[in-house]
Image (cartoon, rainbow, N blue to C red; front, side):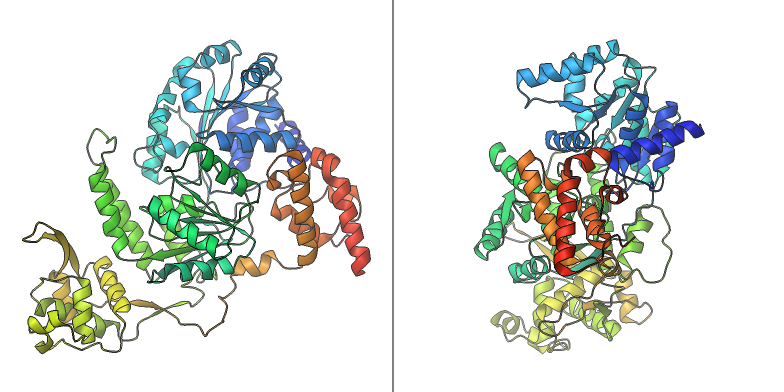
Length: 626
């Protein structure tokens, strides 16, 4: 066993340049090598791929990796080949000659990792060939796709259960970044995993800074505030609708941002062009619906911006997980409105999904949306709430990596009084109007509608004249999320459905001061005042020569263009920052940097070393700062 562990460490260092494994990677590899089924849940960037890649090299046989998207398979194959590992894929986009060449290598036993989609594996005669080759290991990536209770459900993933009968001597290993206890159990049952090793990592991503802000009228300005914090860096901006994507990407382009759209309404060629440009770092920003993201393996996405609330915490965790996969600092911003919940509610109720046998899809979706809405409005550390949602505990008092802990969001000093005024106004109008009208009364608006109804004579008229309509609306939604105010769709005489505010027993408890509430508002910064730096942002740049890092990045771009691969295939940002921090002065010293394996040292080491030497001589800087 010790000899096997040593051999595995040598392989990982030689091919991937990794000298220290992350949490749970070793037991995950042990399960593969021992032929035991497993379910591995590690956050995005937690090193799931290595768990099945390294054992495949050590064993010297073929591991079949089931992956949902061609682009994702291609990225992994390119990355493995650049590290000296024999890998290939079989997909519908290949030419006949390329497919025959891959099959020939497979038959000859020269392929360590074969990547296929679930459709190709199940619907073709590929299974017959794999049976002839006596394949003993299957790795199922993005395994949450098999569960109705997760996100990105894909019916074809359900068919993978036949692997246990077609390959009774093979072990099945499922990998995902996001899975609640319910989803984990569903994965195990649907795949028919046999007494699997269940390995669940820490869901916290300390390198991510979470910020949630109320979405305001000038959305473009809010978006540009985030984009400007990350000039020339990669970012993903998520929108709810295709029309929103087209509108926002056009506005960003007009403002000089290198942005491209991505959604299902574009042609396949247009979507591929956007995805390739982003992967190759020829595009800084992708504005997309949630259809975009799973197929992106770019490790240096420095921010993810949601322009509306995702429909579940699982979706949010997965989508923000595209940021900072290299372990370096990244920002996740969510622009939220109380209306988001009702938009999603309407979309889900109008859809016709493939529902589970117990017909509880809508009920489950509503629960997930309520959880997400509560997360957006909570006055607690964002990291803590995310971790606790996945049934884990979070240690510490202040993460220094979210808007709450950085002091960017504060409690409203007179929250109880403000809440009582809002609830009282709802009572005075006999629960017959919506949020906008209630805000207008409380502000003392002199509108004709208010005067005609006599509502300018109410005791609640003009009680909050100094507050903006936006703030009153947001506080009303916060009261709804705390369960002390309700909102209900009511049909008008003309047949329209409009949202009306309603009181409940908790509302009266607040008005009698028998129950307390807490309301939040952003802390206003002075004009030009930057956002506070997170703990991860401060530490990840410590000691890094930023000018040198930029020179290394440009060299990486040139080498990637010459090879026709994404830049992160050459070296990721973490490796470049280490090179710019330590400035190794020889190839053996460069080999000690994480991410520099033997093949990459051979292929790229000379050019990177020469750049390091030239920079240090020009700037009179010392080298080998280990």
